[in-house]
Image (cartoon, rainbow, N blue to C red; front, side, top):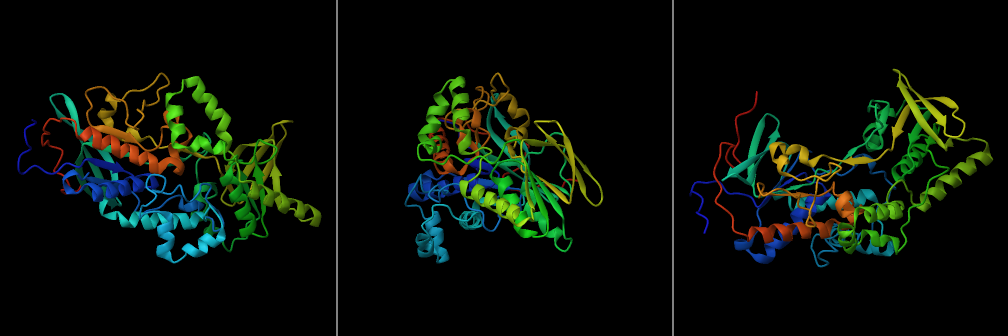
Length: 454
């Protein structure tokens, strides 16, 4: 038997979640449902920190007519627990739109509606989260040379709080990716900035936009800007001949199945690479066929009418952008001839994708216990727990950044509900293992406010 903690020792969370986007909202829901089922004695205690002041998910991309590319049934809970009270269907019922949605005969809701669903779900478990708190440090709590727990320091304004936990679940999401040497400015945007910045152009009568990229976000940005600014020219620049359609056929969609994660995890590295090559067109640099057809029809109509505002600069690339106070000079190079053409634009939008946030970057010296492969990538077990040496007993779980080990669903909604269930099962299972008593170190008491830093 492990000795008991002192009577005045602060409580220790079973887990702390860093970030409160869809993945960790789903984690909080899974915890809530688990605790309601097992009762107080076996409840899993948790807290989450989110640096945003409220829930928000890709707000800059909530174009009014953009739809989800994943079925509403792959919400935060349904494929794990079809009877959950946190499902998209329960959300629709609460909003009085269930019958209306059913009559629409669509599996793919508006993106803005799904965001509202996420906000609705997050609000039901907001007792577990501290918004406006940025995690600034994770420090080890060591006993007999083993990291048994971690102290997580989060800052809100001038104040900091410290919480202690036996496990971390890192869900820090994705970060916008720009080409090397290109910085985001008032006139050079990433597509994630679109809706936050576009209102600043009202009343300025922009004459030209340049949109770089060949994926869904690029095509949506082209269509939106063309519609929003009816006097402006919109130039789409990409290295292909045209947008490639997404493969959402039934058999190809099996790459998103929970069982596909098992297959991918067990597969040799060579097979992993083949699977990603075979099925990249289900998700990467592809566009819904309906949007492709609509853009083509629009471009053809303008050609017929002799008023071409929608231009596709294909088999080309953007080689340079130079900003002046009034415009951006973009240089487009033909991949065939090498000819370079300058374009003066009001705004250049890079729809160049995202990269996973470095979740382990917060771990400091704890990261030294984590294992990496020959390419420097973090090694992750099947239960999404970071592989570590025996000196790290505290579990570090990743929600995202695991594409190299778990496949294409690493940062997608498709497998989120199943993934959080597997992480929870792992945490509960490991909690039943014998553990040594944990010391109360100088890192600060759980949930107490430290002196403001100066």
